Image (cartoon, rainbow, N blue to C red; front, side):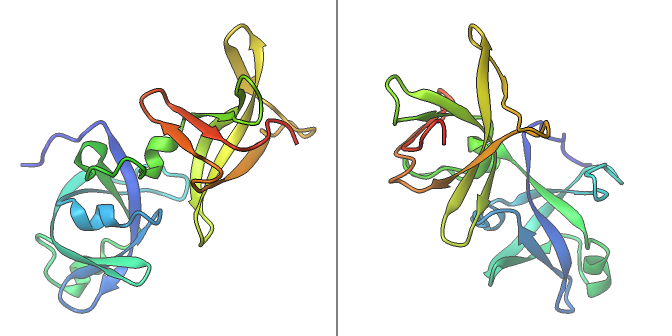
Length: 198
């Protein structure tokens, strides 16, 4: 009997292939925080098409063991006993309940928690709104906040700023302590030593 599907699932990786002949799988994490895949025992699996449309029902899988393997994670799931079964999972997306994420230190953050936070510039007084975080990526040296510029239209209402082609304007801000000295997840705000306009 499967568990009830949590409503706080986060995409954390994709199964790229079988690993070895004893039913292990290889998972490519979606961020540098692959330790989530190592620390959480219950994974949720669903195959989707290239546009993210579900091709099958979400199902849970219990982790038997896992370990880091270079930039990927190799794992054994309960009930997957041979290479053919593992190979059948290729292309499946791995989700984990946000409630199951291990706690972090005060100066550490899960990237998923930064999505949707408003970013304010410390170079203006009072701090001016730069925009809203839509994505966090890794450039190899550190995280990068993808911030969609916002403009005030009425009172406290904001809308995305668009370029001449009608596309949202995005700013890339290095997610390092000297550039981003303050993150307040409770208030969904980030303060950055970054100009509002440039």
